[in-house]
Length: 93
Image 1 (spheres, rainbow, N blue to C red):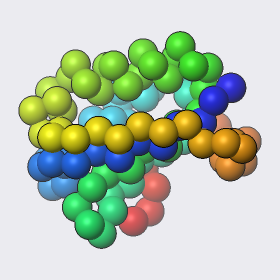
Image 2 (spheres, one colour):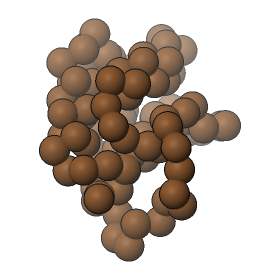
Image 3 (spheres, rainbow, N blue to C red):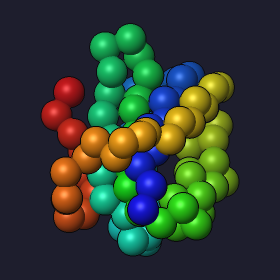
């Protein structure tokens, strides 16, 4: 299992970004969530098998969301800070 934190910059708030990421996540065996940040970025924290996470992030990059992303910063979190969770959600801002 791996936990990754990804920050997206660009026009990523007010365009349905979080809801679209949530919809994409339903197709993958991952847990975590997505939230808006006060500085205008969107943060995704996801946990799952490395290949599943890679496929999920590729799906985001290849979706209609790509037009809104100007920068993506991806990092692996160690140790894995997420508690055992179920599903993928929109975190409270």
